[in-house]
Length: 154
Image 1 (cartoon, rainbow, N blue to C red):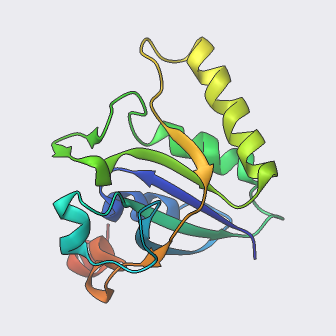
Image 2 (image 1 turned 180 degrees about the vertical axis):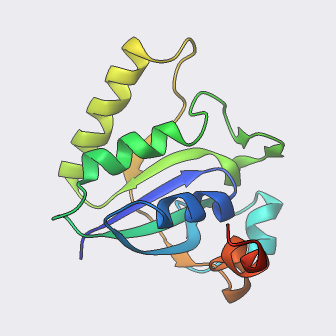
């Protein structure tokens, strides 16, 4: 199963949105792009590890492609705000696409360039880089909104 990695602010809402996309087979929240391959939520929140909160997306290429996932990513958050989404501020909330190889980098950069030219009034701050030091977030963060609000059927 191919995979993609996206950081678009607090990972709870981003995970929920990606989990609802047809063709996405699994999601997992974690931390990536930091200085080590192991960290904790508390360490990430300190700002000292340089990790971003991210969602690891596994998908079925017969139902959705990487290009569509990247386009969806740019639709679900404001990629023009540096180190923040809504009320969440800090480097862990930055907009980032972690890529698994040069092909993903090319697709993501092409989409970012087109959106910068045609879509947004401000420059996109999303970084596009090879995945570095990904680690899974603590169990209580996994499917957080689904577990917390399951009684609401959201």
